[in-house]
Amino acid sequence: MSLAAESAHNIARVLIEALPYIRRFSGKTMVIKYGGNAMVEQPLKDGFARDIVLMKLVGINPVIVHGGGPQIGDLLKRLGKVTEFVQGMRVTDRETMDAVEMVLGGTVNKEIVNLINRHGGAAVGLTGKDGDLIHARKLVVQRDAPELAAPEILDLGHVGEVDSIDPSVVNMLVQGDFIPVIAPIGVGKDGFSYNINADLVAGKMAEVLQAEKLILLTNTAGLLDQQGELIRQLDVARVNALVAEGVIHGGMLPKTRCALEAVQGGVRAAHILDGRVEHAVLLDLFTDEGVGTLISGR
Ligand SMILES: Nc1ncnc2c1ncn2[C@@H]1O[C@H](COP(=O)(O)OP(=O)(O)O)[C@@H](O)[C@H]1O
Ligand SMILES: CC(=O)N[C@@H](CCC(=O)OP(=O)(O)O)C(=O)O
Image (cartoon, rainbow, N blue to C red):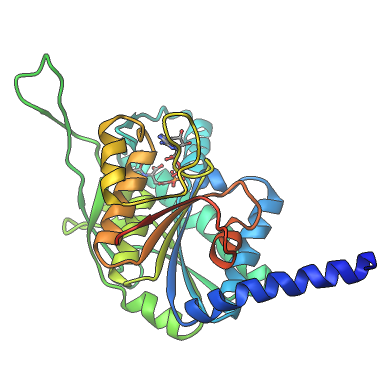
């Protein structure tokens, strides 16, 4: 076979392999969390945008929830403001909240919207304030230590968690064939803005939309075991055991927690994928082998 014929044959094979998945997922909603650490290098960003546009073209409804932790850190550094994390959450005072809104609701959100649009999609950017989408409440964080008589309550300022989501504006955009791009900022009953970890927003959004999948793009191959080997698939019980053993820690804790809550709340599956791999989303959705880690509810 000539080189050209071989290449055409490979393309045909790939399309045929993708066909049953395209048929299965067409018309379904998928929530994709695009983490700040996965937004590196222009070719990767372009690959991500192409994947999203392709999903839309084959009838899937992608809903993007994005982070931007490193990008917030960059602005705070330029402003000469020290930032601190407690249990994976950024301590957020009034000034930091302003920076979070500028970066998440401004630069990062619009960069993703522009990226998708340049690749042929029609994206619309939102924060949790738009259409009264995300209602937040202040996150209560406790610290327990042997020297403490009782757990200490820590005040992280404007750090929130999702109280409720009104998906009307997202549903309207999806019905209009737009791709919603959501920044994880919510509003409390007190009228204040709250900075919410993007994984938490993505998990709840997937649950409220009863999405087919929650896809979390991050900066590791997926969930790794004690030996640093990729775990391809696991269920709720194994996740709980790995947390208890301390194998899942740091930023992976909120990620796996929200993945678990989503699958227990009716989302069919949660995937943790390596956002540093070009076309990670397509490779996972449309090939028999898949990539990354799959957490299934049943
Ligand atoms: N068992 C584990 N498998 C993979 N990564 C883990 C694990 N436990 C902790 N981590 C850490 O979690 C990080 C991903 O979380 P985080 O930095 O919050 O990502 P993101 O910014 O994409 O949300 C990894 O880079 C890794 O350092
Ligand atoms: C409370 C809290 O920590 N909020 C995060 C929100 C952004 C985020 O989650 O971004 P990544 O997904 O890129 O980490 C922050 O301020 O960094």
